[in-house]
Every structure is written in C-alpha cells, then in structure tokens.
Length: 68
Image (tube, rainbow, N blue to C red; front, side):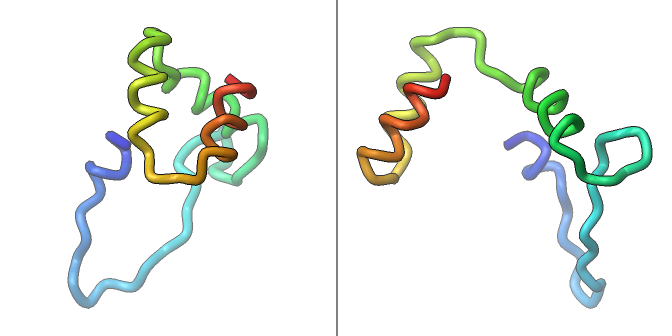
C-alpha cells in the first residue's frame, strides 16, 4: 500500500503500465514473489486484524488465511 500511496497522479498525462521490480522491468512471477517477500507482515495478530477488516466475502478471507 505504501507503494500505491507514493504515486502522484498528473492531470493530462497518459497512463503507463510498467513493472518497477525485476532486472529488466518485465513482470514475472519470480519478481513478484521477491517483492512480496519484502512486504509481508511479521506480526500474525496484526495480519489477522487487517484480514478481518477487509470488505470481502468470508470465503475469500478464509482462503487468504489458509494460504498464509
């Protein structure tokens, strides 16, 4: 979320799709995995508190809980 909040929108400027991580700035599963490894929440209680506050169907929340 910090990455998203750092983005500044500029009126009149065209949007651009670009992956800023990875050696050649090309999206890969490997580069995504590496990005997420540095962004995980260490405290399990903090993670659970955030998870239950998300507006999503219970099944989706349960799925995230099982995957984590």
